[in-house]
Image 1 (cartoon, protein in one colour):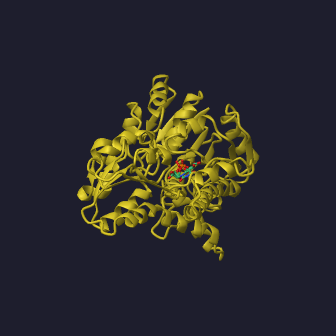
Image 2 (spheres, protein in one colour):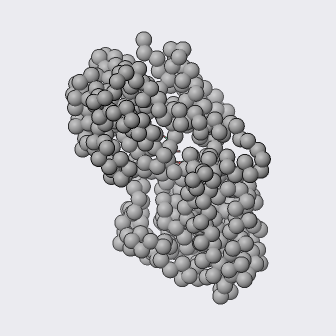
Image 3 (cartoon, helix red, strand yellow):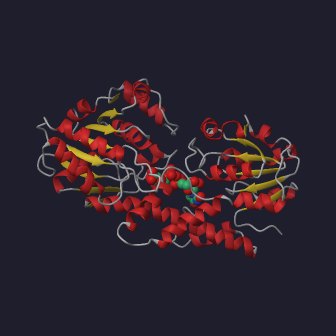
Length: 437
Ligand code: UGA
């Protein structure tokens, strides 16, 4: 099938590359020429496992190319995906600016088209957006009618950053929100090679499934963090508790890792957007509000621990291992380290950091207010305390490095280390949901 993807963020680019690898002819579109050039030269513009390799393969086999020309991309496609960003406005509500512009541009390009094409929304948009914003703009600018002249679907994405290629190729489910059966049939055909359950539903239900999925996962994390805080007070290891409850099939063991809260470009933004969208309906989503508030408190757990150890942080050398919001990612958006570092800076701490991938992004945020180290050894050298803030695999093997520190104290925000092993090595261990004897 011929497919165009408007927007080459991690969702758009991964969708384009994977659909090309599946045998489709794909055109990726972006307004930023540097991004388009990079894609055409086989350079992945984001850090994503296996992405560059599959990109290069499909460029060579001529199933993929990129352009800034949206009109040409619409013309050549059977299915056109909208996968532009939907950032938060200052009041946390969703910003539909890119969606609106893209809908107008696609509408204009559809004007002189006679072939039936389906517009498939992949961007995360609050329930009702496809019907109330996107379709009216497509119709207005094309002078055509949805359902008759062109089709519309809403296909939410469930890709994790860092594992997006794997998730695309091995989905748990495909959700097809369809304006009408003809639109849904076309998209169904495109996804028929992926062996997973397919749920066909209406547009606003598909939009809601995306938000409800992220809100549920965020709730699961805040739930286990609440249990962790209770465990800590009662001298219980939360990880054992998570194992125990996860054996119940109704609960399942995934997403029960207590830690210093969720970050990234999705959970915080999506849960906040859902909250503000229902205020408009006169409903107060108290559970979701608490999920967010608990998460904000949880991010500062390491600073509370540091303060239990040292009352005055002035000139204390604090080593922070990990800056990204999660391992295998260079992304610092809404990362817990953002809140941690800002508070430690207010307390005049001397901060040294190390992250295998996110340092360049951190430099853009913190400039010369903190120190950036080339490796774990440099970061831990002569430190008063170490905070582990990201679940990078290499942080699981740092036991022999604690001798470099001034005080062998570790505050483990991501359950990277074994407390018993730390004890054997005379390392004072603090972990989320873990009480020291
Ligand atoms: C998340 C969802 O997992 C994807 O299904 C969804 O498609 C995506 O958002 C999106 O809406 O685009 P992502 O933000 O990449 O994906 O990251 P996750 O791996 O889900 O982790 C999110 C945050 O939760 C991280 O900060 C992670 O450290 C934290 N987390 C995760 C925990 O604290 N505990 C857990 O048990 C799991």
